[in-house]
Length: 473
Image 1 (cartoon, rainbow, N blue to C red):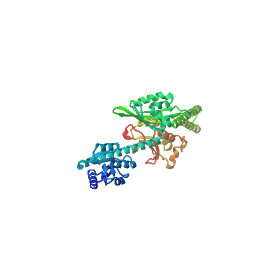
Image 2: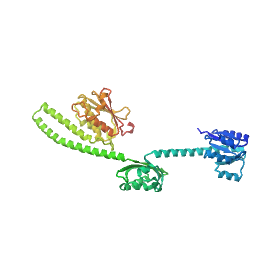
Image 3: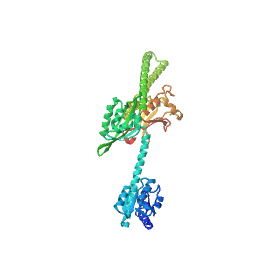
Image 4: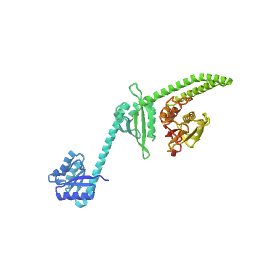
């Protein structure tokens, strides 16, 4: 729907003023026209809701230019159209000098109503459009000034900066006028060792590529400042017309990543040393156990064998734990049935049965996903009967996988503790299996939920999985 337009029409001939008002409203139903017969009465009717003033030039108590001057003192920019039978060059010159919005000679009045209505609507809509643009610009300015990130728009060849917010001064530690005066001055704020890489990145964006890069700011202080820039080309008629993007301070994130990497390396070294120190005595003990078992079989030696097997599992789990913190970044297509068969063949199955209900290809880290399924299979066998049946299939919404068994299940009150490190209800378990499963699932960006299968057994739902067949997501 078109927006109403309120007009005040001033003419010192009452009948003519009313006639013009009626005909303008007839020409365009957007228009609502109030008639006034003097400068004073007309200005009294002008308020914040008035969109346009139409006035004769020569009035009984003044002129149309006096109307213009008085109205714009209180309402700057309000459109004023002179609709007059005084068509001299002198009047036209004065009107133009006074910045009248438009000028129309009455002439044959009946022929001018349509033109006058068109001029009013066009003038008001142009003003409204300009006001909206100014308002949007103000909103965007306020928004950009609230941002901690540097927001920018450059010419496609980096020769001019079209927009940049004041966050530049905080992030790059130099006055924003420096980059306005010389658009590539921001490179001088970059650490010398990273500048060449930045020039290369800028060149790639100018050639039409999206670039995301991180680099250091050459700060005066001792603390290292890292930032991350995202730059995207705006293509017009096949050419890079502008470059838009943002730069944010990632020093805290970098410090956290470096600290996490340090901790992971330390954990990896710790696990390797401990595993090495345990492997040697374990190998000695296992060797002597085999000699003893070759001479006789006893319940005591069987208990020693079980203990050594549990130690071996703990050592293996410790080495796995050293890798748990890392997110999966390299996804590869994996045939789920092949992976499941490989995992099944690598564990002690006893009389258990594996039922694979789906034949799909998923994306993930095959080595780490093997640990997921092996641990889930072992968990079902350790806590179920010897002939437990384990089933793997797709979730009902086909957004992931489930692994369920027909064993005793996991009580709702025990599900949270089942994922805690070192918690187990099995005499042979280590309490690492399910926590490792959760860590690897989350490292893939997926979700793990423990529920109850329809037959009462344990069920593990893994959602968020990406399939090679996109329709299965």
